[in-house]
Structure formats: C-alpha cells, structure tokens
Amino acid sequence: TASMASARRYLEEKEREIAERNRELEETARANREREDEIRKRMEALDAAKTAVASKAREQRERRKKEEKRRMLKEKEEEVSRMNRELEEAARFNAAKEREIAERMAALDAATAALLERADNVENEIDQRTNDGGDGIALGR
Image (tube, rainbow, N blue to C red; front, side, top):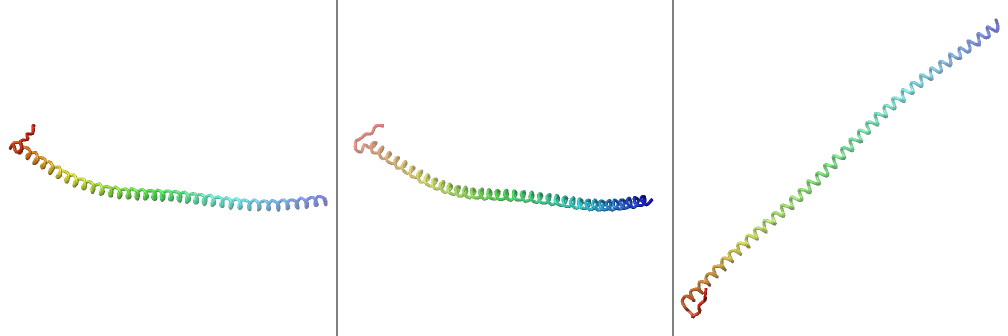
C-alpha cells in the first residue's frame, strides 16, 4: 500500500503538473488570441489607412488633371483673344486700305472724267475747224 500511496502521490503530482501545464497553455492560447486580435486590428487599421491614402492620391491626381485642363483652357482662351486682337487689327488695316483704294479710285474716276471731257473738247474743236474750213484740211471720218 505504501507503493500505491507513492504511486497515487506520483499521479497526483503529475496531474497537478498537467493541470499547471494546461493552465499555462490556456494562458498562452489566450495571450495568442489577444495578440492575433491586436494584429488583426492593426491590419484593418493599415488597410483603412492604405485606402485613405489611395483615395487622397486619386483625388490629388484628379485635382491636378482639372488644374491642367483649366490651365490649358486659359491658354487657349488667351490664344483666341490674341488672335481676335490680330484679326481686329487686320480688319482695321483692311478698312483703311479699302478707304485709300476708294479715294484713289474716286480720284482716278475724276481724272478719267476730266480727260474724257478734254478729249471731247479737243474733238469738238477739231470738228469745228474741219467744218469751218479753217485751214483746208479735211479729216475723213
């Protein structure tokens, strides 16, 4: 019976060791679960931060694209404005040239009319001289 008592004590000691080991394992398992939960939370926070950063980066790209489009539009508007000014200047120049041409044409018309009148006068004078028999030269017509 002494050996049974010794065996019982040995078994009880082993059961206590096993129970202690089980408590340690359970504590380690609980600590691991807590660590896993913490890691999962950190991963979720990192994913959220990554999404936020990506969203902000996308917004910045879109904003830069819009700014570039605005800049290009402004440049085009400035170019159109410059071209309009050049066209207005060309139109003013053309109008001035047209006035000058009209004035020259009017002067040319007046000179042509004066020459035609003078030619008529000379012709009339010649006709009078030939009809009057002034110098005896007859011009045949």
